[in-house]
Length: 58
Image 1: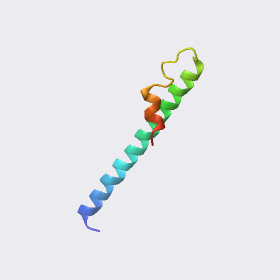
Image 2: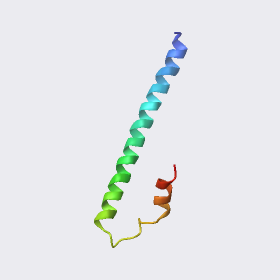
Image 3: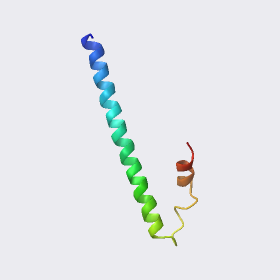
């Protein structure tokens, strides 16, 4: 491996790791929001919202 390709590989690995951490954080936050919304069933703002549609779509 040349130094250049090694640097590119390192950057890609760091970006991938940062992306994984970011997605894990987003997933964690969404779970908290979901949990909070189940605690307050009378508050139907979260239910059937665009937010849920985004989650439902692949």
